[in-house]
Picture: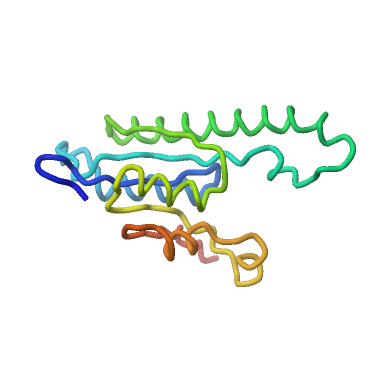
Length: 162
């Protein structure tokens, strides 16, 4: 928690999905609007880059040759995510955001970053997976809602009705 003159910390989890992009834009529009230049939070935007072994999920013959390429790809994705987040912040006239990339599982990384920065609020997007996909893939937002030591805001992108 913030003490004295220090602003409370908000952590926004980012990945390469449109849901994540929407969550960041939604958050900036509501908490960091240009008409309120004295932003209420210190903002950290965090991307969790999976390690190559967990991304590939193989350990058999030939894995050693593939892993460097996968790792390079994951680093490029991480750089794109951060550049996209910086661009969104710039387009919304939000200066002073801090950008961090960590390697590991997004669920653990986000909860660890919340603890590291003593965050008051964690913002994550929702992919809108059904029960089966959530059970197989795991839900970052669900995990964080249960394990983060702060309030968690899950931003859902509205579904377009046809």
